[in-house]
Image 1 (cartoon, rainbow, N blue to C red):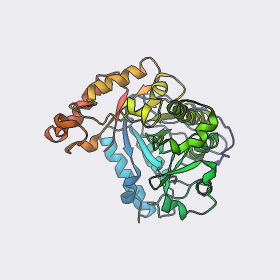
Image 2 (spheres, one colour):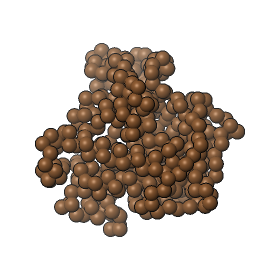
Image 3 (cartoon, rainbow, N blue to C red):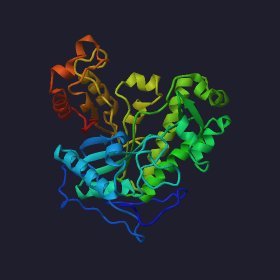
Length: 378
């Protein structure tokens, strides 16, 4: 439920909790949610030692929200969570900030395009998830904003609109018809943290989750001015440092509110591509405490993938988190089952069609690995 006390984004308020992570999915009667009040201002997050996760992306919101009443949305999201629970899911990553917008009450961002009602979907989703003992993590895309056309229609009061209208600042850049925040600047890192803080200070989410949308391009022109002004000589490392700065700031923002809240990152499964195309320092984040509580590499590859076969890739990620204290959860591509995989090479392109049990086999392998669970993208 939404907190009764609205806290200032600028306030550094630390909340405490006595939540103990659980090993099994509790029934609703076993789930204990402490109501937030104006007096206490805190609650006990629901989180699990072993995650069985599910991403619910904003593309599903067209069916769940658009043209729907508040009662319709509550009924539909309750059924979505109930179906997930039947599959053993105990943690949901709900896409509440996908494109510089908000599927919650926000002073920083406009409403998402699929939210045409006056109700608060995040408030309702948290309520329904917690009734089932499901942990709900607010899933954010920190850098991705609106398309050029969408941005032009926004009121001038939004910070991102002001930055987009002032390209000389460098804070917002356009790539292929869409705007992105530029992580080269501390002002942008502060704004990203404020976005997370707005959710943390107003909603009883159990964590904050970000995925693999980091740098949108390798083009040196994206942040040329900031790079030249920095005095750095290695563009790739400088960009990785920029991303790590806002990742660390997000982690610290989450922990400043409640140490039992979790912050998680879901990078792409290809370790080299993380470094060379998105400038994501996954070795640092996975191998060192203080950047993430859990990491979910998207190992969306079959066993016969020509470049990144599933099992060796899983072992590489196991090595990254070894003895780090960072929880490893394996992202699995349930959406690929039964489909042609054009990027898998000649040997693996029909694997998901020929073998109806790829996902189940991957789940069984994950259960015998050093990972602390798996998450499904359906």
